[in-house]
Image (cartoon, rainbow, N blue to C red; front, side, top):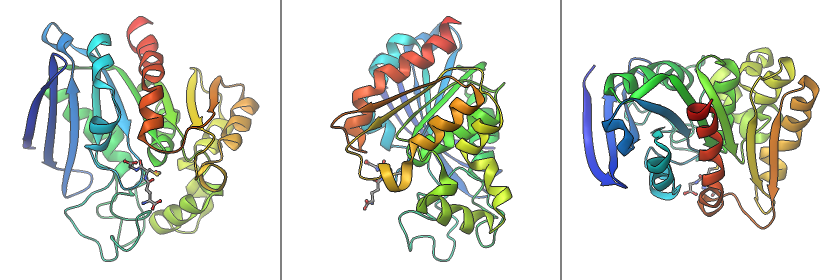
Length: 281
Ligand SMILES: N[C@@H](CCC(=O)N[C@@H](CSC=O)C(=O)NCC(=O)O)C(=O)O
């Protein structure tokens, strides 16, 4: 596999790098970004994956999230993949902003015409970590994951299903119960078909209800988020976590909406949450 370094920028004593490559899982070009903190010059560092939301790219979090200064202080490597394949075009992939391009939903599609390329779950949990390992700076035994909205859903699902791989998890305004909201119905029926039993493997509330999660989960949510009631439904996830005896640190933040001003405000809390588990423990 050839990894193309698209661009490189010095940042807080470390490096921002943007890559493209031919993906084994998505069978087309994929792109991702990496922040390598200065500590990586002395030895391998923990890796924190960030999954972005609908319409975002591999650039959004790095440009708007405000994470690099503290990642440089804490010694965390940050990795952010794109939110869908883009180069292999699928008929109708740009017809909606919440399905298709920029909206891979972090699932492995089983339905045509998506199944060939839309394999974001395997891309994020298998292929991307292998590629990150090949870069040489990240510790394979110290990985965490977080994300926003569609990416918050993705991060929770990846962590809940891969407990030995991800040692920390958090989310900003995640789609918490995709089987019970319009975005989730649209994505799951389009990518996975109509068998709702198959949907459960990608629904964080179903997953945490079925099995206690052994580490604290951090979720922040703005109370002025226009998607809160119809699409995000954190109360369903909170109730499911309580049912299984899992530890959820959920905070409703007065005045905050769904955007990156909200995310960047609480970024420090999330990075420290991950650092506690990836570095200190
Ligand atoms: N085009 C949409 C708004 C799309 C949007 O709000 N995307 C969010 C993620 S939503 C859930 O996954 C986002 O992160 N956007 C990028 C940004 O820079 O804010 C509309 O018309 O409402």
